[in-house]
Image (cartoon, rainbow over all chains, first blue to last red; front, side, top):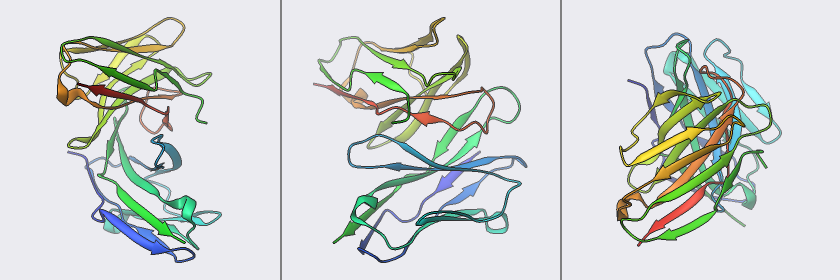
Length: 117
Length: 114
């Protein structure tokens, strides 16, 4: 069965610190997709990134970067120079579905990031 | 703004009642999904529709039902409501039906059952 583990329940940092959110996944599929979503206090789920299992290069988008390592089944997310607006719950998710014409996202339990000024 | 529109944003209702949550997917998206977020269960997949047809079911209760209409909007019907149904219900959409599509979520509908 697919499983996503976000072991860090809550992280508190001071503004401008770098922070890494961990995500470990389990799947038997050879082709799979991983996602990160942000849920700010207002409640909406905001898409951040999608990565397929064949693409192991690291991604950088502004202050955000992602480190995908198949060898350790991890897809970690780093925020550089954190800001108060980064305070949110961050979810890692694994896509289940194969080629059978459906898609389910299996979510981790989320990591609450609190950035204080 | 993801482009997925959900109504109502907040809803308070009594136990035993029935409610309907509505969703308009992003323009061009054919797949619609419903997810439930509760404190004890986290984010759970409920159901997926693609172009009007049901594609997959998750842990959706028999008291809940959904449909996707020809104009691609979707409704989630929750009946015989219980206190435990209080949750944030998300609608989401994607272009295609297969896994790997990027799924965009709406702002959610907060349901409180009293």
